Amino acid sequence: MNDPAVTSIVVVDVGEPLVDLEAAGLVVFSDRKRAKNPHLAFVRECVAGRIEHATRALPSGIRFLGVEAFRPAQLQHHYYDDYRDRLRAANPSLPEDDLDGLTARFVSPPDIAPHPSGAAIDLTLCGDNGEELDLGTPVDATPESSAGACFTAAPDLTTTASKNRRLLINALQSAGLVN
Image (cartoon, one colour):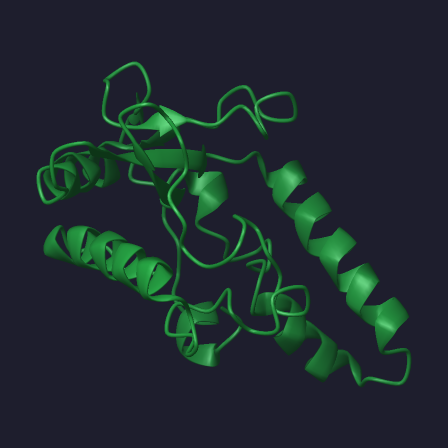
C-alpha cells in the first residue's frame, strides 16, 4: 500500500453515504473488534452494492464473516504504529523506508488507508452457523506469525484452505473487489 502508484492517488470525499452491512443483512460480523470500534460494519454505499453482488456468488450455506470495515482514523494510526513498533523491535537496524515497506504489507499507512473512508472491509467466510471456515491462517495473522501464509496467493496451504480462499477471491472478484 505504500507504492507510489497508490500514494499518489488524490482522495476526495464525494459525500457518498455509509451503509451498515450488518443491519442490511449482507454480512455477519465477528465481535472480536467491536469493543474498539462500534461502527465496524459500515462501508460506502458503492462497496455495499459490490458486497451484495458478491454474496450471490457464494454457495448455499456459506456467508461472509466481517471483521472490520469502517475504522476511525485514530484506530488506523494505532494499528499502523503498533505493528511498526513491533517490527522495529524485531529489526532495530532496519532503514526507515524498509520498515515502512514491511509495515505496509500488513497495515495500510494511515494517510492512504481505505478503512477510515469506509472503502474497505476485512472479510473471511463462515457457514450458516457462524463457524469460521479454514482459510489457512487466523484472521489478522501477520506475515511474520504465519510465515507468509497470510498472503492471498500463499503456497503450501491445505486443500481445504486453498478451496476456501478461491471461493472468497472468486466471489469478491465477481463484484469487482480485490484484495
